Image 1 (tube, helix red, strand yellow):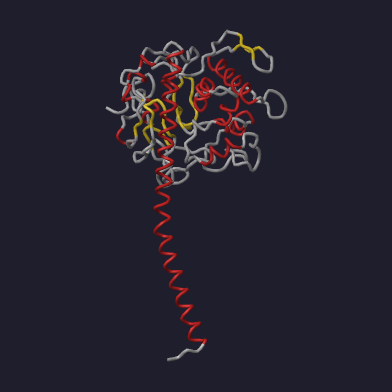
Image 2 (cartoon, helix red, strand yellow; image 1 turned 90 degrees about the vertical axis):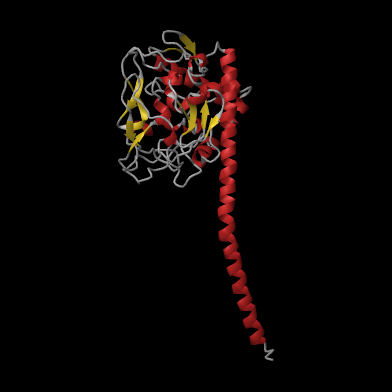
Length: 350
């Protein structure tokens, strides 16, 4: 037998190579399983968030004459902001914008100085900030409001990062449009406005359906409606728009009507937007249950107050998931439960 040192060294190298191969094989086997376990855990946490929001929604309704939570300030009425100024909205949108500003100023203490929370009267605050009304109702202290991640999907790492650094929204912060307008994304210049960027930390991963804060439009009322140029902004269909005042008792089919839903399905590759057929975003129904069915199982979206199916192209916001077909993908998508036919009187899953 050859017992030379060189022979023993060669055997050691072979054993090392074998060990590395085994470790690599185990890693390739274990990592996907760990990822699936993490996805499942985050999915359950997101369901838990939505269930808590549903419980908060019901408590809010019990304390507020059956109203669905949303902005409640009325145009023509005078309200005092934490900075001492008195504001009177000339429209429902203005009044809601001032209420949004009041909540954020009071809860964050950002009343004066470089980080002051300004108004956004030029924008409809309902699209991404209606949840602030509920958080304000539920919170007992400033800390509870500022640290709460109830309105954030645990898998939405971008939103969690913005939430943890509310004073970081300049260049290099990662906040949408902090570094100008990237090609292929929603190109509205308003996204670069300070008043928009400073609010990303208080945004939500969950979208709320417009029917919960405006009329169903079945009698020719003026409404906010979708616009073909972008899925992220709504357009006013007239000047006489009344917002708020919707009640839980107005929901015709609570178990079949979506109230809030994840904007993206973070448990699938490339995080498909909720309108894709294969997307399975968690959805809070008006009866408090959680719906996890594919979007393809839901009814088509309809233009509010009209009888035509509404479809449009998904154009991403900066820092958000891109279309499944890549940037500038022109695929037309039904917006499903966002624009339910007949609003609160309609059904999304039947």
